[in-house]
Image 1 (spheres, helix red, strand yellow):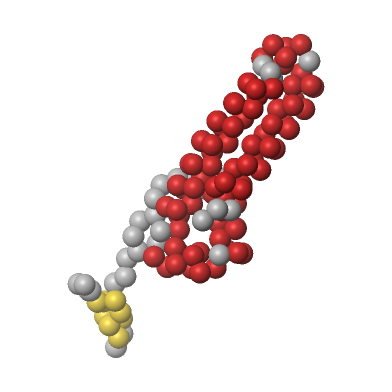
Image 2 (cartoon, rainbow, N blue to C red; image 1 turned 90 degrees about the horizontal axis):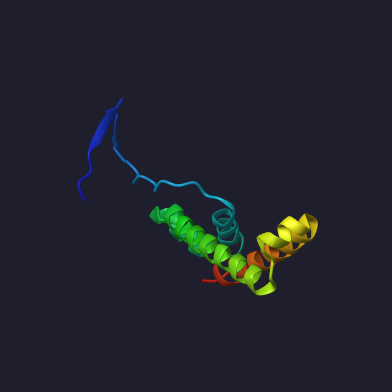
Length: 117
């Protein structure tokens, strides 16, 4: 390890530069995973935070969860016959069914990806 120091008054302070965080914004599933780790898996959360891998982990989980959620919504909607034709005929029925499908898909994603280690 090669450390450089900077003189501050009478003291030599190490020049510590943290690794750059990966680009990306944490959204719903990434924040849910972060909250879960903070509250229920403190050791894992602390380890990821100290190693600088937390945001990378959260972005990876977020991407997996969003892909799985989109796939589930599409599959369940197809299976239950929720189509654009239904949307044109009865918008409120379509909205109710889609909200139900999205809630079920989110619950599946939470159990399979967010709360799973």
